[in-house]
Image 1 (cartoon, rainbow, N blue to C red):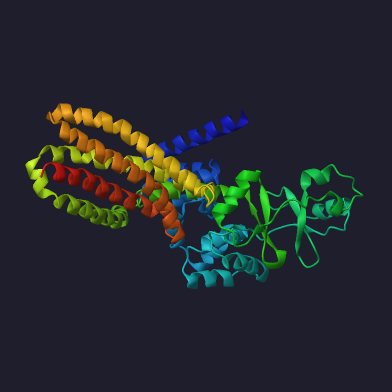
Image 2 (spheres, rainbow, N blue to C red; image 1 turned 135 degrees about the vertical axis):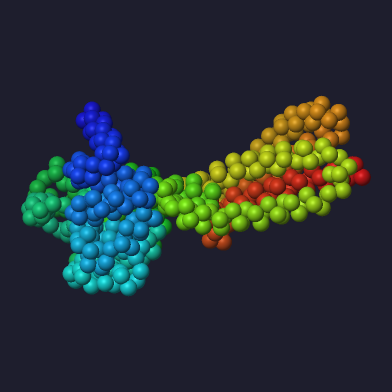
Length: 453
C-alpha cells in the first residue's frame, strides 16, 4: 500500500513539474526537481523530454544530485551530458560512485579524459576502478564491484559480528560475506541470515556455504544474468585464475543487463541501437537510420532482380504480379516467427548442439503443415479470383516451398551467424527477408514460366 501511494505521489510531482515547465516557472521547477523527485525519476524525466527542454532541466538539477542522475540515464543521453563536463567536474560528480558504475561511465569517455579523471582519484579508488576497466564491459569482470567484505574460515561468528559493527555501513546488496583463504582464494559464502541465527561461538567454517559456485571473471554478462535468474541470486562472487577473489556482482547490475539485452533484441530487429534516444535531433536520427535503409535497399534490388528474370512470363500472365506479394509475405512472416523463437532460445541458453536437430525437425514439420493449410486456402481464392485452376496450383506449390524454406532458414541462420560472431538479432532479419523473397519469387515465377511457357 505504501509503495502504491509513493508511486502515486511521484506521478503527481511529475505532473506538477510538467505544468510548471509549460508556464515557465523555473524556480518552481527547480524546487520540485531537487526536492520532490528521486534521481531515477529525474533521469526518466530527462529521457522523456525533447533536447531543448532536456538541457534546461539538466541545468536546474542540483550539483549534488548530478552523479546519481547520470547513473540512471541511457548511454546515449549520459554520453551527451558527460561531453559537456571537464575532468575536474567529472571527478567531483563521481566521488561517491561504486567502482562498477564508475567504470561504466568512464568507458564512454575519450582515453585522455579517462586518465585525467583517474589522476584526480586517490590510490585505492583508482586501483579499484582500473581493475574493472581491465575487463570488457560485457563480461563478469566489467560488471563486478570490487567493494566486498571477506572473512577467514577459522574465526568465530562472534568475531565476525564485532568486525561488521566497526563498519559505518555495508556495501549495497550485501546478503552474504565472502569466505577466502589467506591468499584471497575463494572458499565459500557466509549468508548473513544464517550467521545471525547461528551460535556465536561457532566458526565460519562450520556455518558457511560451500555449494555456491563463483562466477569466472571472463563469463559473458548474458550468462551471468542467466545464472542469477536460474538460482535467484542477489549477489555472487567473481574469481580469476586460481580461484582468487576479484569482486562480486549484484542483482541491480544484472537487472540492467537483462533490460539492455531485451532492448537490444527489440531495437536490432529494426537496425537501431538499444540506447537510441527517443527524442534525438532530426539529423542525428536520420543519419543513424539511413545506414539500415541503405542495406535494406540492396536486398530489395536483389529481390527485384529475381523478378526481372521472369519479366516475360509476368507480361503474359498479369495475375502473377497480383499474387506475388502473397508468397513473399507469408514466407517472411513464417521465417520471422522461427527466427525470433530461436534467437530467444539462444539468449536464455536453451539451445545447444544436443537439441538443434530436434528443433530443426519440428520447425520443418510446422512449416510443412502451415504450408499445406494456407496453400489450400490461397489456391481456392486464386482459382475463384482469376478463374484459373493452374494458377491456384502454382501459388499453392510456391507457398509450401517458401514456408518450408523459411522454417529451415529461420532455424539455421541465427546459429550460423552466432558461430561467426555476428549478432543474429541485428543481421538475421535482413538476411531472412532476402532469402524468403528470393525463394518465394523464384518458386512462384519459376513454376509459372514452366507451365505457361
